Image (tube, rainbow, N blue to C red; front, side):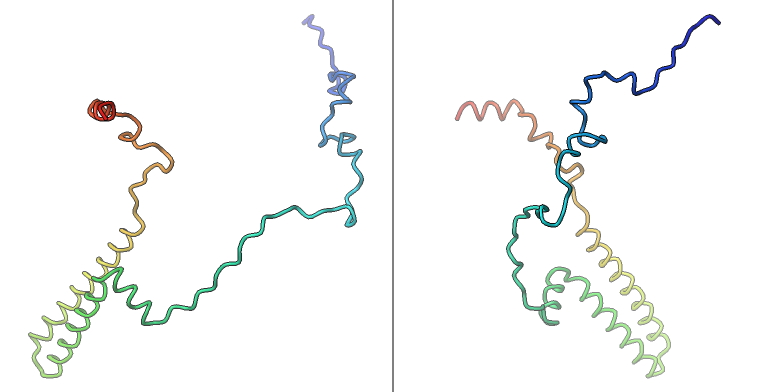
Length: 155
């Protein structure tokens, strides 16, 4: 109604002596006084040299097999059990014993299922950690209990 608004440009709001403290990122700032970057005056950043990685010989099949058997012993046992039930089922089928053949094939399916569960269990066990909040202090390490204060003071 009777309010008088003065419209000023953003350039006029800045102080007149602000030109001396202009940023290097603004046009006409400190970077403008630097010489232009050319191949002659450009220098590469100094990067600390890392030692060359030591080359390891490739792992043989037998070494990998032994390492895997040692890390997860139940998986090969499950595979051998599955193979036994499969061979036994095929043999009973060949000998025309349908009842034993059916039993062996059911045991094969069960041992396959158990082997897969064992495999999943090992994969989950290797990927699961109890480190819920990395970098956070454990409450038992953060605060001393009364019995710990007495022991440390008495020593």
